[in-house]
Amino acid sequence: MNEIDQEDAFDRQLRDATPYIDDTGFTARVLAKLPPPRRQQLSLRSVILVGITLLGSALAYVLSDGGRFVTVNVARVAQLPALWILFIAFGSGLLVTTGGQIAAISKSRDLQS
Picture 1 (spheres, rainbow, N blue to C red):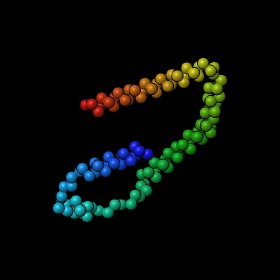
Picture 2 (cartoon, one colour):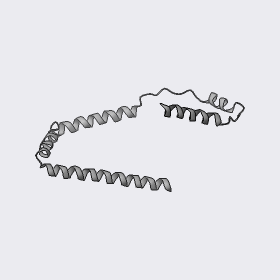
Picture 3 (spheres, rainbow, N blue to C red):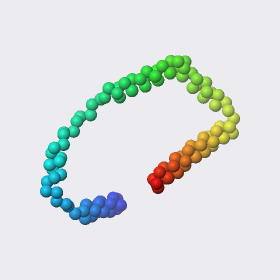
Picture 4 (cartoon, rainbow, N blue to C red):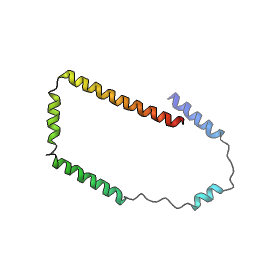
């Protein structure tokens, strides 16, 4: 609670320290000339994309024999020895961590240049 009060006090001090620059009504005139905000409408593009996605998902489900391949492969993985599953999990974690580090290094290089 004390940190929140302290942050509010800092925010108040920063707002009070900012000097007001008189623009002789320029900001008010510009805002008055702006068009009113439009209501967000459902675009035809989004409807088409969602429809095609649902159609593709249904088609993939039907063509894959109702997702039977998923249950077959889960049963196969369940029959693997525990040590293999441990190595697979460790390898997957290592790959994901390496990918994240590569992305972070790439992003930091972009920010430095």
